[in-house]
Image (cartoon, rainbow, N blue to C red; front, side, top):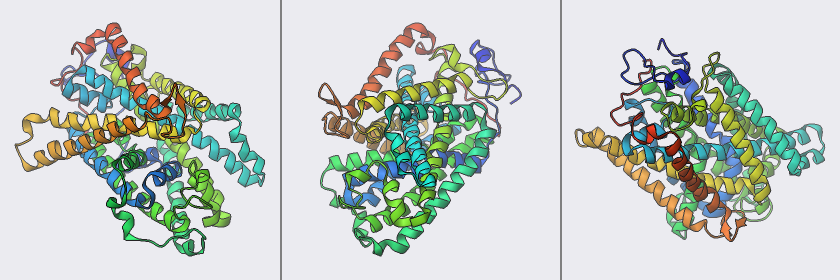
Length: 517
């Protein structure tokens, strides 16, 4: 792409790329990533060590001994949706992903809300990532120096928020400098966390019978009929969806990937499969060692919910426990950095097509990154974290549950958009029927069922941490309230930048962006 370094602010003025119809360059540099690099970015964004320490406790609280089967059930809509993403990416590779594809399928209004859902999910998880990084940073310092009081510094709200701002600033700096810097950072951090998780699993299997709360492995853990209510299934799946979320960053960098039409889609599916294997191994090993009781090492002990690995690292790994603290710290820090790629490129695409103010479409001439959008995402995530740290009794748990709602919304919308976008070719072959209709519809409908069930349940103040505002559960306010806020912003943008909403900048017949093969 000879015009790859042209700034998207120039593109926003309407200058076209030669031979690409009415598509203009965003300013991103193509061909920077191969399959391995994209998979590493996907694993980094999912952050296995971080997601497990945050989500194992709440998921066990909902699913009990059926934790492994919940992970499997949660994986089903993920793999179905990933197939829909692959089809859409092969047709229209674009860094806007959900926003671009849903706009082309259902029109600008629904597309804008899909983009908002993706942005909101990323801002929520960025604040969560920063929070975990802060906790484990002070825990690591405590273990390293042998001073328990250092770990307690994370409870100081002012210091906690200040440290969070530092982590976010560092992540924004790396993201701003481009994919080359990102790759160097991610290879080291992802490799380290996977090695430590492997050590944790091996030692848990080797020593499980020495734990007072240990339970033997049972195939009944994979029996979904042992879960008592559908609400438990929905809540468990919603939490499980959170631990898989992030593979779609592989598609977000499609314009910057070699053979982006194919490589990005394959990388997304491959990332999800690898992460499933990691989660099943870790969850089984952890359950065998700790059990699901509510005392001691038990996974249902409320004191263990917020950070499972904090409670279990020492009993399982002994003197090597400090490695787990460092692994979770590196995992959350790595994901904090790589996750910025998704909202920054989504903001870039939305502004590029006229759905957001022009400054968001600006790309750094030196690094070919969405500079303004990256900084804006950092400011929003840090601000959200600061507010949540004041109003929530359990920041991590409430944001995870709200994030599950957001993921179900925009993943489900993208999956259904696939079926509608390709509606004229659905019955032309068995492949098209399965990959463009059956899988996307099953995945999309399943996610929306979970979305509505969880939304209804989260109205109750006792859902999540018990935090409430005027008698309404904080999780509902975060999940549904943020979507409603998006609708308000959409109406404002429709008045400020009406061209996009009149279908003047992005339509179904807008030619697919040409990316390097």
